[in-house]
Structures are given as C-alpha cells and as structure tokens.
Amino acid sequence: MTTFTALRPILWVENMDETIGFYTQILGFTLMGRNDDWQWASIRKDDVQIMLSENDYEKPNGINFTGSLYFNVDKVDDLWEDLKAKAKICYEIETFEWEMREFAIYDNNGYILQFGQPADNIGNTE
Image (tube, rainbow, N blue to C red):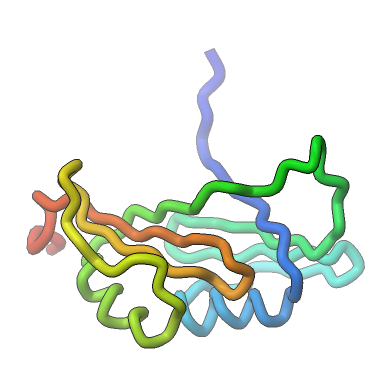
C-alpha cells in the first residue's frame, strides 16, 4: 500500500509579491524558492510547506477553491494575540464543543486560514 508522506497545497494568488509578504511578514514563513518565469514560489514554516502560483490555470468545471487551510499549532493563544491586530479576522479564538481551541483569519487573497490546538493540550506545550 502507498504511504502518503506530506501534503503541499498550491494556492493560486493574484499578486505574488503581496502574498509572499503576507506569509513571511505576518505569519513568519520563509521563502524557500521562487521562479518568476513560472510565476511560482515555495514557502515554509516548520513542517508546513505551501506553494504559490500566479498562473491563470483553467479551472475545471468552473470549480474554485472553496475550503480553508487548517494549521495545527502549539500555543494557539499566543498566536492569536500576535495575529489579531495584523490580519483580517474570520472568527475569534474559542474553544469548541469538539475540544479544539481555534481561530481563523483571511490571507491577502481571501483564503481562510484556521489555527487550532486540542483544548486538552493548552498549557502543555513545553
């Protein structure tokens, strides 16, 4: 059986420079590579990698990305305190009935970025 080892989403973006700026300056990602001829870039933070593309690919059946990106993090409350004044808020931090403490923001392209931590791990991040 095949083992899946990672997921690296490619986000279609309207402005590469603004998007790289958002992810590096607001979220602390590092630019790993960029090719302007391909209109492509790769960013990384810890074990999370995202590729960016400014190419205007044909969208099959008119379907656009309709989901969100959910980041599992430690110290979600600290991240909330850092981001709440820097980004447009989708929903504020809350502990939900499914025992996740989470919040969500929008990136500069309008993608929803959710950040969550299991509620039973709050304070156990050493």
